[in-house]
Image (cartoon, rainbow, N blue to C red; front, side, top):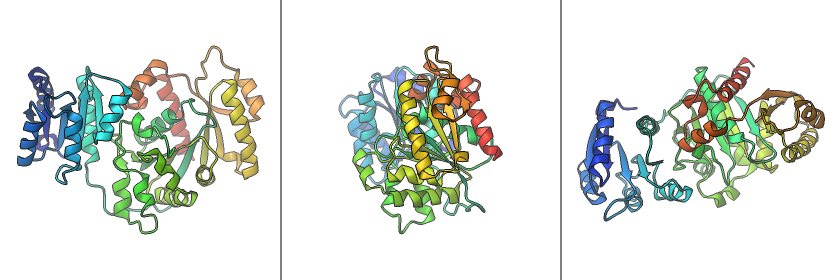
Length: 381
């Protein structure tokens, strides 16, 4: 990432008090700042010098932020310009509209100054030129699949935080793959744009070089690299099991630790992940519905002849006051629970909404400590 002193940020907002507030914050952090009241005026400034990053209000007089964002994405000179949109509305529809317009990030006013700085540093880290010849590992990296037989059990939260935790406590190269190709949430949980995603690899799978592969892997400020799912759900149908088999080989050849956030179905693409995985972490909660689905999956494991040594059960929300007892769960699944994680409650919701992993925003939270324990155990093997 460029040093802050050489990094130019353009702030576009029709409220002079807001512009000054953001500009002062960024100047104190060591960035150079330009200000503009409208998109039209900002466009003139950009023709003179393209900034390193743009912070822009959606509600601008004249051309609004969404329209200007789309216009910038149509210009080759600003096609890859990192853009943060800000708005006073926190509706999910507005956030999706921002990403569709081409924004890399979206923040809701009011926000803490530290949050804006974090997001700016994150985006600037993503604009680093990827290594053109990343040294391949002497031995394939370990693949850990995070699977849940039913949605809504916290699988993606665990996947994203586990990947970041692995990077925090080791010098390993860590990759995180979103293998829910239709409705993956890894990007949303880490506040990442799907500008680059697996479809770029799939389209060139038989003629893929290292430069292209590394350019698709999105760099997160934590140090992990992410292979995001398609932006358009209908593209998922173009991804085959053979594609996933080759992608997993690529990831294992380039990273020490590969975390795969699996889709809940049993199609051939998920089966490729489960067969390739060195460890399969199965996320359950102490509720009868998810446990029935998990029980059926355990029957499938036997039919697929997957090694029982691969499997480890994670009981999420283990502190539930109305949940089933651990002994009853183990008796029903005929399998021991390896890890118990407490419910993160409101802290997890806030973390996910902000796009900052809990192990980063609250490293001493009981859930963060539990996930770090899983990371430490993975590194021992």
